[in-house]
Length: 620
Image 1 (cartoon, one colour):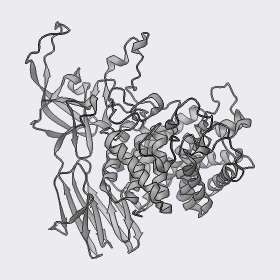
Image 2 (cartoon, one colour):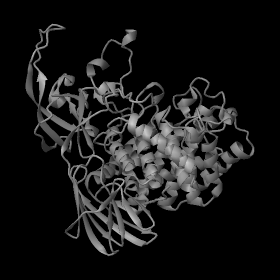
Image 3 (cartoon, helix red, strand yellow):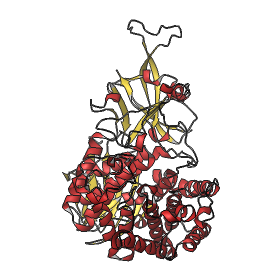
């Protein structure tokens, strides 16, 4: 098992290009847009315990987690961009929580306001989930500002949880209904040095799925829904609620790194492979069913009804990143990249003000407007336009915290070897076992495969060669080199001085076929260029997109779509002539005619009003 150390985003600056624009959008627009919606809906007022049962602003069981993720987002922005007014807003929220915390360390706005007699009685009601997000937010805010009031509050909370769940055993359940606190406790351990928090994380992971873990809280669903069907070391497939699942799997991988637990590592690998090889959309979306927001069975990946929750794609990227630290294999960074640029990034509008909860791979507006008074027409389809806030608004602040800390995905190191996992216009300075190093990336990725990296202090450099790339070349100080490749990484031996490493990744347009076992994609292809999945929209290509055929030998052109600010692809394809008088069924005819097709990155769909959209098209 490998023990690579991740380079924290605080050591990395995103200096320009694709992700700098996204971070500017979050800092300048998204963060305060989410704040305004949360303030309007009573999430912040709930921290004062003023809600009354029956009123519209009665605290929901998971509102505290929404607030926590917003604070964590703000902390990441403050880490790079000092802002006294933003800091004041966070301090006000922290003051309210500290004031409302009970003497024994308990804090949860719903239970303290609505049903204080039911603390720690219902596994499904998100008490531990909210606590976990509060812990992560507190650590992030302390690291950004040095202020420790919030950190001290969550430490009191963690101490209370340890007492109730481990020492006293007075809680009515044993493991979280929604995983998250496991990751947070590891983070709290690293921030405070208090090993009890790491041991508490181990307890929650180890007890899941054991005989002790069975309770009546989730009597309405299968234990697979909350990943309690087996002890974690015996699990081999991704099951149940997709977000809960990947949060658990991430914690398993993290604890394997912390403790050297080979069985946890092995289980995490098997589960990751099941996701990546059988249960993941080409966009990196996961969780194909709206029923339980869950994984279903191998190769069941419907497009029109795809759930593919935004938080699940984000969670998969984090799980993949964690796996890269314990297993040297570029496929983990490949999966993280797939999710980051596609199934995750589609979740936020191009102006940063609205969000998707679900991320389908096909949209047909006619199906959304059919007569739902007929029972058989009540099949559930994802919404066609992003929204500013949801009743369950877990995704918006999750999206903002992820983008604000995207620098976490670039580098790891082990015994002096520096691994470059992702390519972004950036600069980084950090310490390795072999001494201080610096790396400056210059690139127009993901639209261009040319990457120049100015390195200093590095003696061994491992560059990821993406799985989508069939041809590549490398140079050091202008001289061509042919480095050895190991598990998807090109290994360069340097002398520790100052060098310029140039990596050129060929980015042709590629038609991608799904495994034949994916029934919904049979006879169809998806279009990719580099890490980006592309789609067709009706606003560019007219109606009935399912009838379009892309030519295997098409000539492709690349241009800038100014209205969207993205790079688009164009080619000539085929579609049948549409005869309004045509019968419902008729003998097959050769009635195809050429059609000019425009493809936009999948992440940019649904930014121009309601319209058809499709990823998987027929091929000719």
